[in-house]
Length: 219
Image (cartoon, rainbow, N blue to C red; front, side):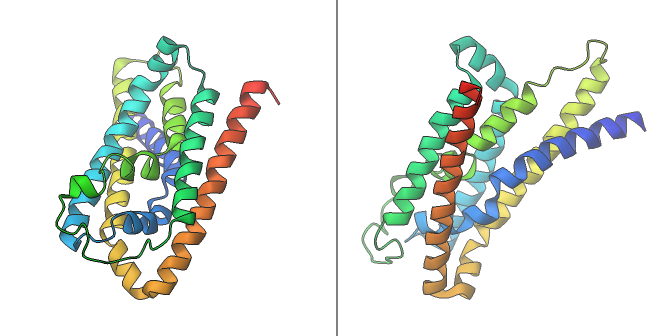
């Protein structure tokens, strides 16, 4: 029973802490907008790659993030400010970009890799942004009790991995079926949703910058 509690606690900590920030449902319209001109099969491949990349990035952030920050002498608030600037820039680009829904033939014959990158910007910063990375690093920075046994550490790791797997699965499903949602909304409804979500992303980016600034200055 103690082992099950350890797994459940780690799962809830990881999933509940990261899912509201990753929020693939909100990011799905951006995924659709940034992959304009690609076929459904190509979007499906990208969705799978983004989910795998997102899982790997979150795992790496939890395991290596705290050590890398110490190694390079970077404070977590500084990471938040820099990442917030990237998120704000992405939101501004999508908010002001014209003809984002253009389905012309130009570029349709280009390889997917030249059209849009699975890692940047679809995984980072669209899906797993600085907020998610900051939370993952914070979770990874939690110091275990000195008397914690190796088996309990392993059970904690299992629960965290299960939480990350479910987050990756939610990313895949949200992006995989983004096109079907778009059909229901129609061109006008999708454009309104993208513009509104872009503004929200800008606000999130600015909020991340502000949080980092307050922490850095002790305000």
